[in-house]
Length: 266
Image (tube, rainbow, N blue to C red; front, top):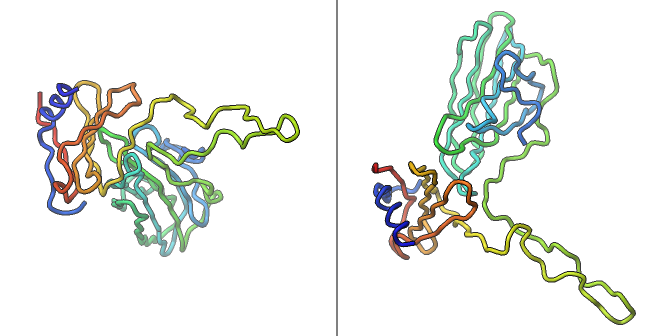
C-alpha cells in the first residue's frame, strides 16, 4: 500500500496548492452534413468529448437581425465543479465560421448572446464542441434563436436534464416494511436493505471547490482534492476497477485552495 502511494506521489510530484480559489438526446446529430433542425424556443442537449459530440444544428435566418442565445453548465468531475469550456461556432452555407464563442462554466449555468446581421436569407449551422482532453468533459447546454429566423422543426431535447457525475447517490430502502403473514404477527420477508452491487462500501470522494485529475502511464487515474477541514486528499483507481483508493497527503489546516496536478515523468 505504502509503495503504491509513494509511486503515485513520485510520478505526480507536481501537486501544488494554488493561492487563489478556483441521455444522449436522440435528436442530436454528430454529422455536419445532416444537422438537427432547431425549433423555436429553447433547444436543450448534453455533450461530451468522448462520444456525444460535436453536435450540429441548423436554422434559416435573414434578411435582418438574429440573436443566438447560448447557455452552458459544465458536468463536473464526480459531482465536483470543474472549470470547463464549451465552444459554439456558427457556420455559413460555405462552411465558413462566422462566429466562434467559447463559454466557460464552473458549477453554474453561464449564458451568452451572439448577434448576427444578414443581408440575405441564409441557412446557418451551429456546431457545439467540447474540447479534447484526457478526461471526460462536457455538460448541459441550451440554444435559442430569436429574430429574423425560420425553423424546420420543433425545439429539441425538452426532457433533457444535466448529467449527474456524482459517484455516490442518496439511497433508498430496497424493501417495504415487514408484512403480516398471520393475525397479530409481523414477519420480514427479507433482511435489512443492502447494496445492489456488492457489500463493500465505496469510497466517496468529498466535494471540493475544484478537484485535480490526471492519467498515469500505467492505465490508472489519480485525483487530488481539498478535503474536510482544509486537508489534501489523494485518490487513485486502476482501469477496470470500480474501487477508489484514498490517502491523506496533508492533514487538517494545510490546504486552503484547490489543488493542481502536473505529471513529472517516469
